[in-house]
Amino acid sequence: MVTCYSNVFSFKILPKIMFKKSLVYAVFAVLLFQTAVVKAQEYKTENIILITLDGLRWQEVFKGADSLMVDDTGMIETPGSLLPDFWNEDPLQRREMLMPFFWNTLAKEGQIYGNRAYGNKVDNSNKMWFSYPGYNEVLSGFADDERITSNSKINNPNVTFLEYLNQKPAYKGKVLAFGSWDVFPYIVNEKRSGVPVNAGFDSAEGTDLSPEELLTNKMQSEIRGPWGGVRLDVFTQNYAMAALKNKKPKALYISYGETDDWAHDNQYDQYIWSAKQTDAYIKEIWDFVQSDPQYKDKTTMIITTDHGRGITKTSWRDHGSSVPEGGEIWMAAIGPDTPARGEMKVQGQWQSAMIARTIFQLLGMEYPDAKAGKMIEEMVK
Ligand SMILES: [Zn+2]
Image (cartoon, rainbow, N blue to C red; front, side):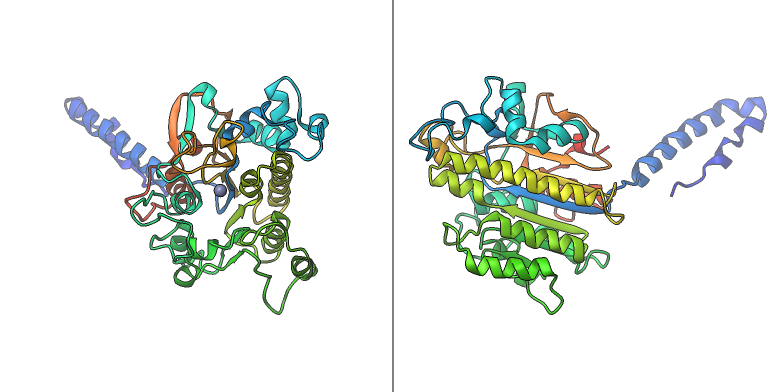
């Protein structure tokens, strides 16, 4: 791993007159040695799990249920229904009620970025502030406001980190993606990348399906859910969990969709329940990871969102470039190479474009696309 420089230190036995010159050599050798150590630093991360929650606001992540909406009868079906489980005057209590895995586990063992109260800012670098541009940015490492201008089912011209990984012999066939939204096969460019994407209302396919997958297929065909292009996240979760257990991917991407759709529907109660359930899904994944020999202490999980949304009683439903807060987002990470700094309180600016290069760094590789954002130094030891 590190070249041996011990021969350089033989200056100890040289005559005194050579001492000064040798000292210069020795200092030079030490510098070389340090460079070699930095370059050869090996990370413990062997597997990557990337998770996104569509359009979940940083405001809920860091402050819990919003006082403006939590009991507004225009946005919740039954008055008072959210209060026992989600309301407390103290936002630190509220956020833990809403996302217990985030605030009990990630806040102690990982990192959570994006609390703007501390000047800790995470933003989209794209200026579109809706889903396809947001996911393209996270997955490929850069904004492409020239070409990614709609949510249409158009194959992504950009190569995502999933595709780059799938090109490498060590990862080929071990990269899987699951999403609730039926545009993901295009965002990941399933056709070109060869990365299998189970999204929208796709069933699990194959001759070796597990009992869980067969049951999930059956239930998905029976429960339509409220939206045309987005399935309920329970199906995405169960397909992803089954694959994690049985197919053992080295890179797994899971995209949950409900939070965005409930928000567009102006149903704050459903949005809050969904955020809490998704937090529980992420805990289920992490608990499995830390119980399995292939994954335990060798897996980094990064969690983020594709865009922000507005802050008023009407604009919270929406996002896009006309909503001033639409580009304000958050991100989190946990893994063997990520220092346990919890809620990040240092001032700074991060972008979702930085995630792809960070993932490659954790896997010990240079990200092949120069256009990608720089790596998140604080996330990597
Ligand atoms: Zn949306």
